[in-house]
Image (cartoon, rainbow, N blue to C red; front, top):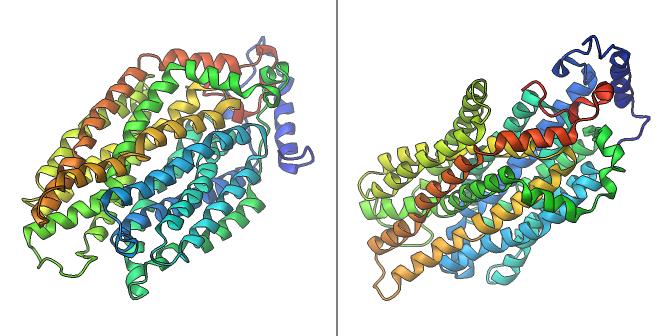
Length: 503
């Protein structure tokens, strides 16, 4: 927490004091969104903070998808089959979900900036360690990958709550949009950078994990210098002796009682399942499809490279950006006439993605052009959810539970989503192939049938978001009432703690 002598906080206090003498009875208090919440200097600093956090988020997802980008090389180096390769992601996410609740608690009760920086340092140091593990030591590679997940969990749990502390209402949505829009960009870049760096290193895939750590270290330095925490204490929090002394078990109990939070979390679990499955096995599916179509001679020496990973990366980048921006704008417009817009947009997008994902799998042995088009549409619809999910959660929980809420959500959606989906897809594929002679058609069919589970999850996820729409208005109002101080002291609130009064 920043010290009381911080000049930025002094400016904010003085700005709030200018409005504290207004006559509440006469209605002289201006609308909250018009309060000078931040000085010019602190507004710039807040925006720079979001840019830094978004940059780190991009690096994290680029590094994560680099594993899928060089997966054929990893399989060859460690002599692993499809299910063992899927287990690599499972252990990574397993570590992620174990650390996320701890990180959430620290985010609500300790200095967020230094906790986030510590997580990033763990992530980049373990990523660099991965690049020095020699071939044949798969167990060591597996365990180190798990520690990478621990660092990521700390950052991804706390970073959105830092943004929520700095901005409110539509500004918060815009800044979260910036933060989450880099996820598909990072994923796409990982699919592109991983193979390209490997080619540049003459087939040494280890170099694919040596690009992001140096950039991450620079980001940490800027984060320490630029990022400042704003006080998150409201009048109600002071009355309750500050959230520092609140029992974490009570916070968790309140979160599990929150229907909008739980239903949104289950919907995000379906999104995570699909993204994890497609992210790991999508490039392999396209490669098997191309081999089956014999648009080029089947490769004789593994690993094969038909540039399908590059195409998949470009599709992921473009569809991700388009989906995030479109989802945010559609919801913003629809919200003017319907306060349930966020979950309704998420639900519709999820259900619409199901037929396009199914068409992508159906056309794999007919036309790769059509397959990539359907993948593009399906991924665009899935990406609509990225910003809106976090925005829903930040709406329906009180400010002092935000880190814990995001931690619980991430724990559940990773544990039940992408922690197991790559392994499950690999296991189904291996089971289907068992007992048959290996052939390009068998490899294609086994992966095709395994990936069809994603279409089922899209429908289930859409249903959860639709159910969220039934409760979101009530839960949002309850969160606002719990955060709202008495009207006589409303002008003493920091803008970052005001929860969408303008909405």
